[in-house]
Image (cartoon, rainbow, N blue to C red):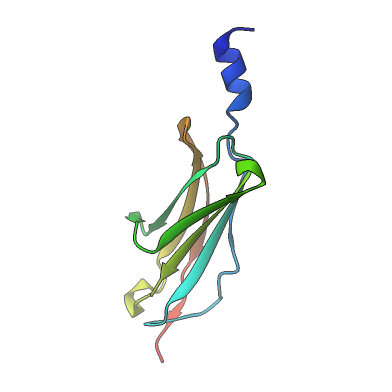
Length: 113
């Protein structure tokens, strides 16, 4: 087996990505925490957050567990009334194979007080 074959056995695409515990209704102006769990990637998955096609970089932190097999990405986000109906997407990829992404998405339901 050549080096490329051995390397491919070590590099594994993420198997599952899901947004956890997203409230059904978000209050505008109130900070909310979103978590995206990715399983199966080796090396650990790189996770990005997107709102209606725009990459979100503020308020994002990542933690990996189980030797990098599980990655949790947390997004702190304060929705505005105009975010109602927008699509929030969590995308995960193996950094060695960045073009092969998997994702989970939710439509935000934002209410004003």
